[in-house]
Image (cartoon, rainbow, N blue to C red; front, side, top):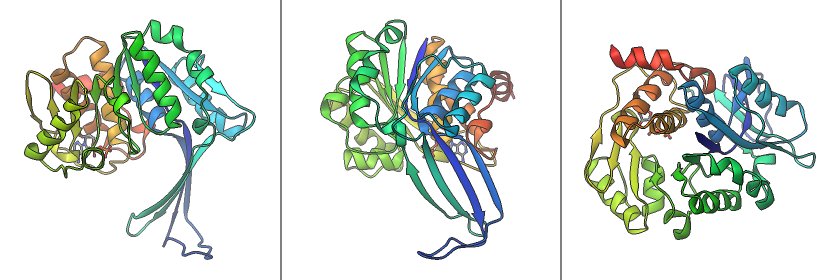
Length: 303
Ligand code: ADP
């Protein structure tokens, strides 16, 4: 069993011929609304990959909350551990995309996901009793991330921390993490070591090991991943595919990783499975709809 603890936001995406300057109104062409948030994307990816996932997030009492709940119901996901508040809106991301250059400007308002209380986190204590893995990120209020990691650690749950969006992480958190999964930029910000290949990824991994992290996996985009455990280190290359939209690649990867680990695969096998899942997702537009079903992943790996 897997608990995914993290953010939900509604993505509101508008495309226009150019991005507005301050004070300007630009007539746009396409609008799309859909579920998003790093935690939610990772939960959906793991669920679609076949894991027994319980998603924990927080929503308001508004129409955007229904975007999360309806998506979860459609996918057959458990909605029992969703916190609600009438005091704050459901989170949303305002995404403006220049249709010529594909450049974007994004404002994320985390709303309810920025207000998860210690009491709410304590209320999932029984869920963590039954979980083998906890996957979390840095997109909800940091106090909630600290709290859920503390509780999970006490119970011996294996903790996977995806360090997105990046912000300082305390040594106390790091010492409890079984597997940390930064991308190159996050690894550099957290360790101070620029990461772009095997040699400096190794040095960044050593930094995390010194802080007590047990295993380090740095995602390297189209280059794959660098994985370091106490026994073995090295690069696992990405699948060569024609990427059309790499938004959410890291979310796809992390969801696939925890799903494979929960099946008993070792870290190397799990990273390879996650590479496949992410490679399928980058060939499609969108985030949660781009996450493949289990059969697609299995047949992609066989090809
Ligand atoms: P993030 O989205 O967090 O920046 P990365 O860009 O490192 O994360 O990508 C995460 C994973 O997604 C990679 O480790 C790889 O498995 C997969 N991936 C990303 N870009 C590509 C690509 N162009 N081709 C194949 N796989 C990719």
